[in-house]
Image (cartoon, rainbow, N blue to C red):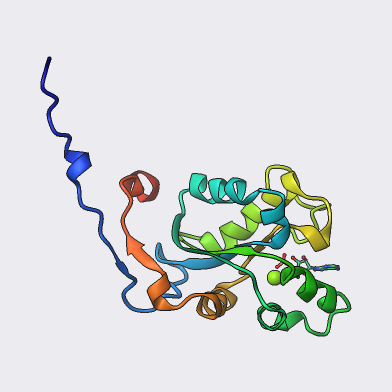
Length: 181
Ligand code: IDP
Ligand code: MG
C-alpha cells in the first residue's frame, strides 16, 4: 500500500473572526454588503437552497445567515418605508406569517447586482434567468427581499444582525473571482 502524502489544503487554516470595523460593509468596494432574505413563501416552497446557490455561483460571499420568525412589529419596521401603501397591512402579515432566512452577502457590486439577480418587484415583468423571473408569478409572493441601495443595505444589515453575528473570512477561490488584468 502506498502512503498518501498529506495535502497542503487540508491543513490550511481559514481565517474566521468577527468582522473588524463596520459590520454593515463598505459600499463601492469589494467589502460591499447587502441584506437578502428568503421570504416565508421561499421557505415554504423549499427554494432557499436555490436562492443561496445563485448568490454563491455569482461569486459573492455569505457572511451571515439565520432563520427567524419575524414578529409583526419587526416586519413593520423592516418595511416602514412602505407604511402608506394600501398593501402594507397584508405585506406585514405575510412577512410575519412564518420563518424567513435572513442573510448578509459580501462582494463587489452585491447591492445593485443582487437586485439584478432577484429581478424586478413584479415577477410578471422579471426577466427569465432572474430569481423572480424563474420562480414566481405574484408580486405579493415574490420570494426574496434585497436591499435597494447603499443606505438601505447598511440600515437593514444593522436592523437584522449584530456585529458578532457576521464573520470575516477568506475563501480559496477569491483570487479567481476577484482578480483583473
Ligand atoms: P422590492 O421587494 O422589489 O424592493 P418594494 O417596492 O420595496 O419591492 O416592495 C416590498 C414588497 O412589497 C415587494 O417585494 C412585494 O412583495 C410587496 N409589494 C410591492 N408592491 C406591491 C403591490 O402592488 N401589491 C402587493 N404587494 C406589493
Ligand atoms: Mg424594497
